[in-house]
Length: 513
Image (cartoon, rainbow, N blue to C red):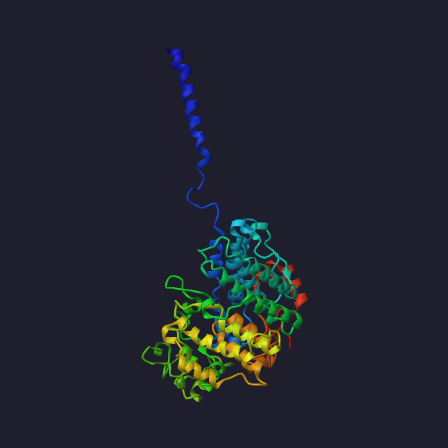
């Protein structure tokens, strides 16, 4: 009996230890965290994070003189002709590379060879091409071929591609992806942009292709014409029903709206050139966009009771003034203080739930107007596309807020009084594009440089002694982030050597005099 106990005890201990070891391999496994992410969710995350960052107010919107701030510090930028790499980093670069390109790249990699997700693969290609277009338009040469590959390829220091090489690739991506979209394939209903609607995605892609072609109008007119023709043949957005825009709500605030309803509520004002353009032409969009807190002497004075949307009372803030000089200018303009200038109405146009428009029927019709004027398309007339573009934008205003809707009668009266006139076609078309791109800073900035319209006067602030923005000129691009200069030094320096000095005044490839 003692022998049985003697030999049984070690056996029990051994069996117990073996049983314990069987579970050890699972002790450090997290059974609640996912091992993979649906690429559709990555595309959605990319789309959501494409809503234009707040810092686009400081540069893009200010450069094209739609909104301006007299305050310096972290808000110094376009109105001061002052470079601020911390702002240019936060503006588009960090937001898009970290939250958009990274996710579209991963979505593309994980769907490329999955037949059942061909539509998702091509949707991700289209969105990535759109994002790259914004990035290269803002900065010029950028990481393109190797961008977003940190996780998939362990490439944390991507090389920069020349913009001249990037644009043909963007055009190729949009062309191929649009053609490959198939309404008979799997429909990605979780898509936040169009709920997987293939027809709308195709129109979006071809509208981007039209935009890319027009961007080349001075750099390569032959390529521009053929690209525009291909886009038009494919079918572009000409109805507001197909507009590409991001919806927001109380949980996910519109970025600019969140800021202008918060810490910067009293810091940004509609610029005089923008207000004067609308006011001098009796444009009904002025009352849809603007509010003036009459008699306000401080931010606290900008109350609902003091607010007026009467277009006759709107006064835009002149550019080129700072805190030390704007007060005297406001007095000269008959105002109580600079807080008395007109603002974009933050309770309508930039409320926290306001949409962000990426590509619209208004913009596309106006580009078609220019294409028709140039003779690049023969279907339709420049005059008709021009009036259709204005009509589409006025009708779009109601999407921001019901109280921003433009009455049909007022719309039609304006269109009848402002037809496309011989000899001023390009100026009229692109001035309307400027208006139609209000709050879309990157697009307004890009088309202003491409077309040279509207005919704005260069911001005079500090220019005589400013090496970045010479006297009588405009900011032409944004500068590379400090993080790139310090971490990806070799590649960014190669881009600078090829493109030109890393200054605000350096032109990108397609931006010809």
